[in-house]
Length: 523
Image (cartoon, rainbow, N blue to C red):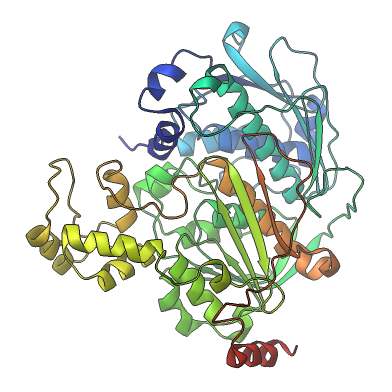
């Protein structure tokens, strides 16, 4: 049976310790989701509902059961990508059937209130005898509250709606694990107490910032999306939820969907994992309703895709890759704008908007030096399993499949003394092999371990917001970077910051690349 929970289990083990299963089995892990009749007909209410359930059903074993209370079904009023269904409940039922998670979903069933750990209420709702969250969204504003109902805009803006859903999911995660707070090793769980109005437009939390409506059709111009995992996939899903869009999107990712990643891939389901569908193909399906949006699929590593890219493809790059080497390779082409993102296993998320010469570049942020984790890992893999460090750098950087020659060489050269270590198989991708040996290989972790599932999703949603703002609201794009946390207290005092280019950077201080950038983008 395919295991969709493996990465969540690994994250819980890292956060709680070896006895995590015993600890969470002793606490209530059921969630009640309530949708008022008016919310079920509202496009924003529908988007929040669908996205919230999409994420929650993937969070087993933290979420064991979901009780969905929706007394009035309604036709889909807007656009919810993927899965069949012309009404809200049919769409949700189809999504659940296709994902086939371990979390149970019971619709309009009398719940056992003593088993409920938390509630999420979308629209109006009576007081409930368990802690929980009311959630709403107004255009770019994501509103959640522990005190009472939040408004829903009749205008479609998936950035505000999906960020609100992600905040509600993170608050639910916190409330479920709060009884074992003293057992959580590396974070301080702090549920919201009060009202939070987060602007995905300018990252403020006053609720009084600019909040413009989106037009029916949005010109995306040219976007190149490199890496379509949790963050890149969430960015694509958010863009695909617009009313209409035109332009050209290039999708680059060599990998197939794997079951172990379904806990955080909001665009994928069990069928995709069983058939090992390419990520680029899954993402392309999301955009099928847009007649004026051209999609190009490149199911290869970025370095192999470069020959198919021209200068215009580098106008705006959405980078959601997980290794420094690829980030540096992207920067060598001096894109006009790079949107980078990251997330951690403790619930932090980050988004950067990089403009060459104005902000730090990818090589400022990820310099090639003696602390380069990819090189350290490649050298250790070479010592333990044979093959040269150069080959391991290529395999790990591209998440390549092991070839017959490589498998045979590893079998001859492996020196690991751990009998539980499984050697690679022909056609197996590096990450799949690496995950199957989780805890058995003593190698340096890259990019901070396994992130909490909803943290990279939030980063991807905000990347989509920056893509949308690029042409519509150019004076309001992120200037620098922004970060916050989804497990401790969401900090209202954190503002976007700019980190200037490093004076020690060998790349963005290079006159040749400065001239190339200015020539390409007429600066």
